[in-house]
Amino acid sequence: MSDTALIGLDWGTTSARAYRIDRDGAVLEARTAPLGILNVRDGAFAAALDTLLGHWRDLGAPRLACGMIGSRQGWIEAPYRDTPVSLAALADALARIPEAMLAIVPGVRTRDSRGLPDVMRGEETQILGAIDASEPLAFAVLPGTHSKWARVEEGRLTAFTTFMTGELYGVLIAHSMLGRLAGHEPGRFMRDAFSRGVARGLAGGELLHDMFGARTLALTAGLRSEEVADWLSGLLIGREVGAARAWAQRAGIDASHVRVIGADALADRYELALSDAGIVAARGVADAAAHGLWRVALHAGIVTAAVEA
Amino acid sequence: MSDTALIGLDWGTTSARAYRIDRDGAVLEARTAPLGILNVRDGAFAAALDTLLGHWRDLGAPRLACGMIGSRQGWIEAPYRDTPVSLAALADALARIPEAMLAIVPGVRTRDSRGLPDVMRGEETQILGAIDASEPLAFAVLPGTHSKWARVEEGRLTAFTTFMTGELYGVLIAHSMLGRLAGHEPGRFMRDAFSRGVARGLAGGELLHDMFGARTLALTAGLRSEEVADWLSGLLIGREVGAARAWAQRAGIDASHVRVIGADALADRYELALSDAGIVAARGVADAAAHGLWRVALHAGIVTAAVEA
Image (cartoon, rainbow over all chains, first blue to last red):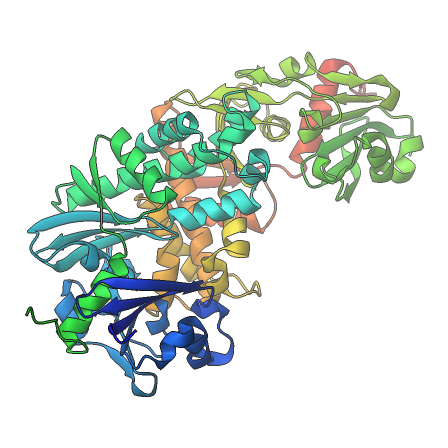
């Protein structure tokens, strides 16, 4: 394990992931624990880090974290940086906890066209980790509880916007009448119902009205109960895709191609919805957070790049 | 109690209300119990009705109900009638349970401009109870878990649309990150935060993005924690008002005046939001369901109007 140059940490609200990274920036191993900041009591972050790292804690490698661990509710606050930001700019603004050999990447802040603030913590590292600085221009989505859409220009994150899609879907299925209609067992993916939901979402209209459609369609045999959840998922993702495209167009961003950063079933859904919207989707790299953390660590001088023999 | 001509029942999903109505159609007394259809086990509706009525059950008066009790999950199904409907048309389509001296008003069904079904059960009776058949034209909102906006023309309900505003607010406050930000104690009404939310909602945009604003405003000192819930309430109600106005305009409905049917704090919020939107609001009558049930009962011949001496 002496080949460990950096321990990268993607430390969020509900879970934390650690990467063991070698001198070439390659991920050797990863560990995950349900030790997100909401699950750490009384500020016991040092103990949580020990638990997460296990025997890695004796490796002596420097640690670099991104995510909610740098928020006001986290271990130490790493104040937001305003857009545009590069990985080098993030590296200049790390918060440090020397006794834990830990540095924390700051989050990023912007404002929407009507003055509402928008923020991210952790996603900036994933997005800039997934999109190479040599690319002149990219438009990317990071699907999730709070989906982020971002423009990257030559390695700088220049604009982004957030949609609460994942969280809204979760609370509606778990706690609303729509969840009761859907039943309690998540079943296999209902592609057709999902696409019908996407079509409705892409068509615009008022979400507060359209979500009631899951009920009325179920009532009138337009949806079987096992289709309700995927129709609703499609509706919400379709709206998000349509709204993100409109946002991009207002900002002068080419939205005909989108990078989907993620490797799970949710990313698959976004690819389908993008395809239904006539947008070309490409997948980002795996372990985008680890890539981003490695490159921030290089910029910050926490690690040095391996010299070719 | 021999002056009881009709027992009217507004029997919904979570609660049930009974009205004792005299020969002039006046409400003498009301009783409420948490015996909505979701709280009645194994189809024991007869026992639930006995409990709700108490000593009224021995009055020998006929009973007329509206609401979810007439749904497929209720006591007996009273199939939906398509718009347009009048109270007389509803009276022609009652479902009857003779052994309980009970008749049930059907719900109403329509389709939106893109073919999605929309439904109501109980609200048709309240809306037509609140708006006199002598009025040539009225536009009304019934705020609630699932808010209904409806056009009434000379006593006929001709068009309506539903927004899941109340339910969405409820699940977000109880179960999402926004509720955690808002704290757990409902405090006094924060008028200014509410109006700022209304303004944001009226301005349009994407709700999935805008609701995240409750978090970012709280984070950046744009909202105090005790203001978060009312800002979100304003955002959702503002969106509903804006979307309902756009819906009305597409349907050729004059949306400059709106009747608010309701007598609670929620109706007060709708009046404020309508005022912020430049729409003139007027309050509907109290006990609109009882009025509507009385008039359906007259049309159905269940009761006869008192003859003036």
